[in-house]
Image 1 (cartoon, rainbow, N blue to C red):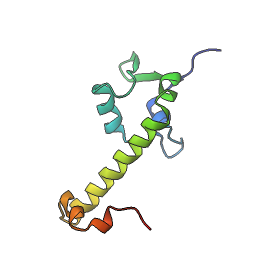
Image 2 (cartoon, one colour):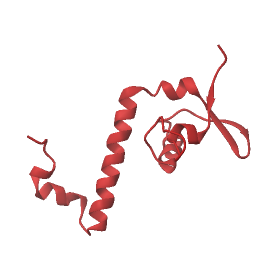
Image 3 (cartoon, rainbow, N blue to C red):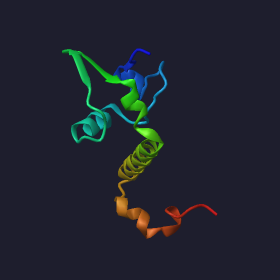
Image 4 (cartoon, one colour):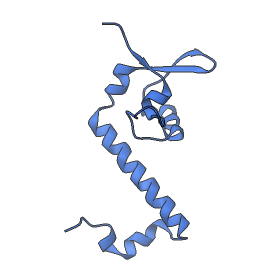
Length: 100
């Protein structure tokens, strides 16, 4: 079987294309820079692809970690918009415990 390759929009998704990895574009590139995600293959100055097998190998655990990071970032944005410190949550333990 021939190797399959993916463009960035096929990995992180667009309005018309479902995402394989729940992450923003800037977080994806940061993850590549620090070695967390697979290195891209440059075909030209504006064309970058990834081996589909490398993306699939990220695995369920990595995807769950990305979901958690995304949720943490959303919480930080919400708290920032409310002019609250991230430590605000620790003042209310019921906000960070599991629901009953």
